[in-house]
Image 1 (cartoon, one colour):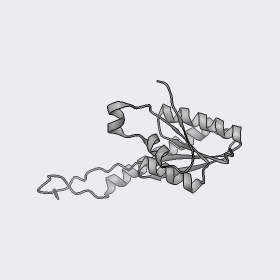
Image 2 (cartoon, one colour):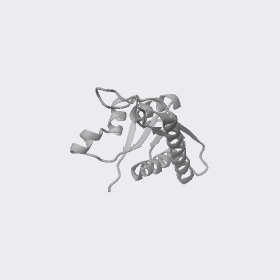
Image 3 (cartoon, one colour):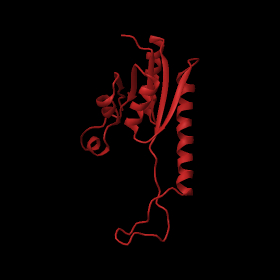
Image 4 (cartoon, helix red, strand yellow):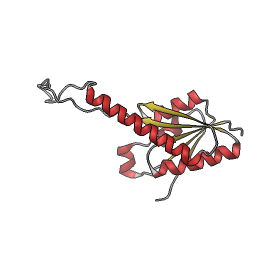
Length: 157
């Protein structure tokens, strides 16, 4: 098995931090390049206007100033998460970093293709039962749809 490039998917959780540490250790053992990705799932805010839909009673959604500010805040948070992870685990390793917008699982898969990764490393929240059913599972989706091996790193609570 030859691993030249490893994509590490992170968010702002202890699970992702644990996976990042593991991923950087694997990269050192294989002398592999590292890519780090954080996905921003855009949050939309309703605009407070008088153009409420008479049937639904809701305002029309659109991109106004509030949404642009929210997107900027999310982008800055994403950059901070990536920078903090690189500073903590990369040492002198060069790291390619990605910030994607949209679906988390699909964004990770898209970045793995763009980076030409040989391995994806992702943490898991170890959800089960109703929690998993309601929340979905990013790591499960990545495992099922990735064209490259996925290393899912669990963390005991």
